[in-house]
Length: 290
Image (cartoon, rainbow, N blue to C red; front, side, top):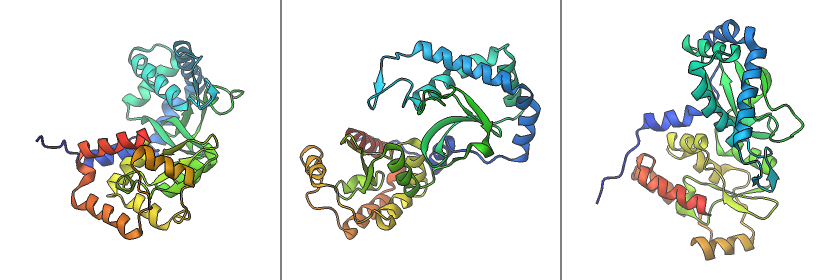
C-alpha cells in the first residue's frame, strides 16, 4: 500500500488564491500609472494581436453548449492568450508588451483571474496591476470588441468566496436551477450542489479551482454552510434526475438526512481529507463523470 500524496495548507491556500482578484495597493497603482497607462493603446493592440493569433490557431468549427466559437469559449481563449503572452513577452519589441515586461520586472502584478463579472457572468480575465484586461470580451456577445481594458475599479469584477454566491450566479449565467447534493453524500463535502440547465443536463457544477480549493482551505466549511443554511437547502431533485443518478451513479434512493450529512463532514475532518490528493482526485473524477 502506497502512502497517499499529501497537500499542505500552504499548497491549498496558494491554489485557492491563484485565480482570485488581488487587492490593489498603492504600489500597484503607482506601477500601473508609470508603465502601463502611458502605453494603454499599444497594450490593447498587442493583446488584440495575441487574441487574433489564438483565433487563427483554434478550430473555429467547434461548438460548446450548442454555441459556436467564440461564444462560451472564455476560459479557452484566456488560457490560450496567456500561453502566447508567456512565450512572447520576454523577447517582445512591440511597445505594449515591452511596457508590460517592464511593469512586471519592477514588481507589477500580472495574473489570470476568475470571478463574478457585474453579477451576470463567470469571467476569466487578466489583472495587470490596477487594470482589468479581458481578451475574451466577445464570448457572450460576439458584436463586442475582442479585447477590453478598464480600471479594475470600473470593471465590477468580484471574487467568488462561497457556494452561496456561486449558486446565485450559476442560476443567472446558465439559466438553470440549483439543488443541494443530498443523494451523493460522500461527494457533498467537496461538491455540495447540482445544477440542472434548461437543456436538461445535470452536473455537480463546482469543480472550478478557486472555489474548490477555497472550500478545502476552510476545511469544508463553505460546502457545509451551503447545504445547511442556503435558501435552497430543502429542495429535492426532480424525480427523473434523481432516478437517473441512482441508476447510473449509485446515488442514494433516499436523500441523506442532516445527521447523515454531518457524519460525512465529521469524517472528512477526522481523516484530513483536504490534505489527501489521492482521495480528493478520486472524488473530483467521480463528480466530473456525473
